[in-house]
Image (cartoon, rainbow, N blue to C red; front, side):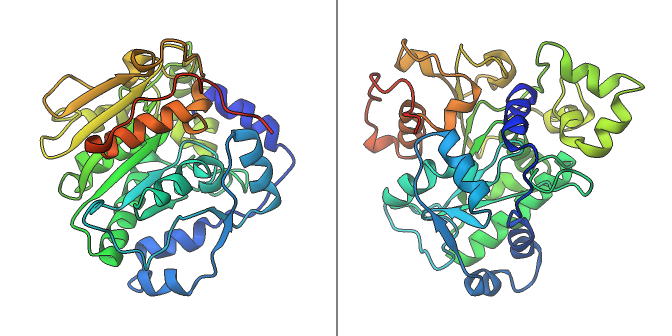
Length: 321
């Protein structure tokens, strides 16, 4: 999520400070005994969810919960789905908040599904994740993918990302060795070129009074801004690499990340998929990419193109319960 969605989420979370299992997962990514440690950690799996409100509520009540089907380090890929799927969060929300709809469905499809909370920044609110320097976050993703590949024996993984996670993943591919480890990068609403959010983020990133405190508490908001140093570094040498298949999922009704900010340059290995091209009645905003049957079906279709099914355009909005 970029700034507007984060503000909404912060209002929901304000005054609550649950623990999030980031320390365990980061230990998996950087220690020599990562796979063994992963198997020894008790896993609390929460129920599948169909909307963000229910997912946030459950995550606050059960701060250690993982989505159903996520981070089974004994999972072995099948011939039908040889690449594990690594889900990469958007800003703020933990794995359960982000992926309690996607993870169980992808696991039921037969994929080994993994995810991590990354980007914890000391001094930020205890429940905030994905707020740290994005170059560091990309390195954390690189280490986690190495762990997943070692545990599963897979040569490559597929990445499914949301919001900030898409730009972190691009940086991982371009600057942290991910081009040799990633088969497909499927990104829902990524800030591929950085984002402006009505000019708010560039102002936060450059104003001499505002930028220093924001940079100390929320470095990711500086890095994700249009024309930031991180964005320029990510794009050095081109945003894409020929060995990776890219899919960017866009919506005209996203008020946070505009299609032009998300779309990747055209190429034989690049697809920019506008949701309205599949369902012209879709009008979901930024937060609905990860809690919407249409967006999930599009992701599943690009993960497994040979078994693609047209999305049911009657399922425009999630049920809120």
